[in-house]
Each structure stands twice: as structure tokens, then as C-alpha cells.
Image (cartoon, rainbow, N blue to C red; front, side, top):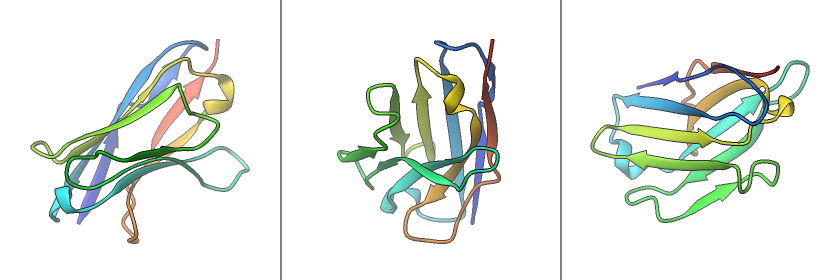
Length: 114
């Protein structure tokens, strides 16, 4: 079982990034999936969650509502996080997580700075 994130990088305030998380070794469509983030010196925090199968249900942290969108492509075993209107306080390592399990990705760094 493995989760592999990609798509992080350096972006200016107000910019956009799309993170991807490819899943391996389990039946991806049957699991809710989520994104978390951890900023330097802070605890890991919830960002977004998407329900299994069709992904009809989503949930977001208040701090990212209206700016971030989580989605999934079960044919590609991939979950995405589209991040728009990025702010410096969004700077963190972003982790993909298989909901309700101990499965985490290795993380991808997102830095928002001018």
C-alpha cells in the first residue's frame, strides 16, 4: 500500500497549484481520501476530504473553503487538490491520507511567497 504525492512547489501569493496523489496496492475507489498539511512548528491539520466511489461528498477546513477543491479519478487511482488564491499561510508540507487508516504519503512541499 502506497500513496505518492506530486505537484508541490513555489508559487506567488494569489497563484494556483494542483497537487496529485497516486494510490497503489489497494482498491482506491472504496476509500474516502483526504489531504492534510503541516506548517513548520505546527501540528498536522485537516485540509479536505472526499467520499469514496463517486466522490459526491466533500468537506473542507474553514481556512481553505472557497479556494481549494478536492476531486478524484478512480480510473487513475488518483486524488487531487486544486489550490487557488494561495496565501503565505498556506505554506506547508501537504500529505495525502487514506481516511480511517494509517496510510500516509511522503508529503509534498508547497511554499507561497513573493
